[in-house]
Image 1 (cartoon, helix red, strand yellow):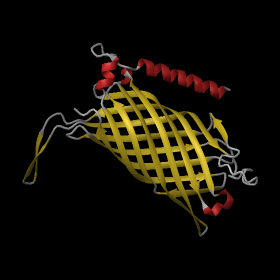
Image 2 (cartoon, one colour):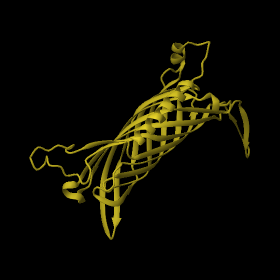
Image 3 (cartoon, one colour):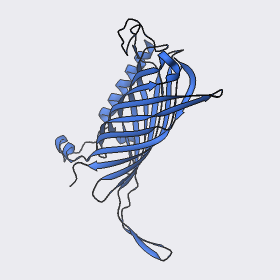
Image 4 (cartoon, one colour):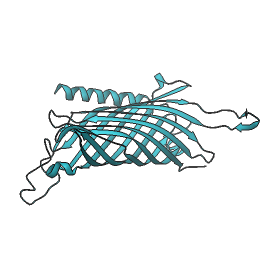
Length: 291
């Protein structure tokens, strides 16, 4: 009960801060702001290092180099930012222990929605600070032939995050003439942005079937992949962060280079699931209101 009260208080404080963090512009109406706010469709490809372990079947770590693709829609300016998208992480993970090798295939799909607001009291002309929240629902599907009847593992990890983002404008304001050896070249004006975002789980939950994956439905010839699954809320832990470098193109589209770190674990004593990932991503941002 005490933990639930702490979560409720944190959410109320978060909502209050988000509500007072918006910058009011007396010239433009809210409708005009929404219309003029830049919007982008993002296409992402990434690669990285990841590991997981599931105490429900084995305490051993499985490690791999998964690939990642994602599709997103973002509307953002200095005052406000919102994003909705889907991400797909997939790859083969391996474990080598006591001269025995085993592999597990992982498919992970995440659906997410985020909203951030400028926090005036901490922002300045050089740094822009935004606060808000992120909801992410991650579904993992894993197969491991070495576990026999327990070879299929599925879990759903929904998380409500509190978020803070710090942005710095590092744009090139003026053209510059440079020379390398005897070669002269010109650096044109360029809009560039460096940003760091931290998301900390406020409401961590999971949908799993506890210790080992065997339910009773298979014995009754009524196979049900979610047999004996339970939804566990206010338990577990999740945190992730991203470091983004965004550079605009001459056609008002943009490229973003990102380093993303994500780590989480479910609740439980003997059956918890843990996973972490380090990813390098490249995102092409297509400007939908390109003028």
